Length: 163
Image (cartoon, rainbow, N blue to C red):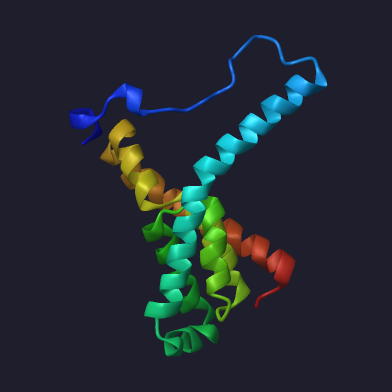
């Protein structure tokens, strides 16, 4: 759609001029730091709002009985959280909102959700299919999923024990 109707002059992003030298004065370094922080805040802000919206939707749309049923079952809770991480395709900053909203679930599946989300999701698989082909995704996504689930579970077990 952007290719059909978009115009370059509609994009207004102020970026500090790229130079081969870093600013030497304190004032210039502070200005560069402030500009970078503003840009990061604007870029991440939309994802944070989206994550908060998903978290709120989980509280409103998912019956509390489902949370209670999953709370005592580590494996089903883990499967649900992994599936949620793959489908939501949020950025890692927004994943924290979703994790916090599922506080009724055990900690281990929530940690696995935080590890799987940035590594394997629908958006990444689509981008990888576009650049590297479907064959790559068919091989890479299951491997990345296995590695992230194992690493998330290992990290959670090392930190929390099995709970």
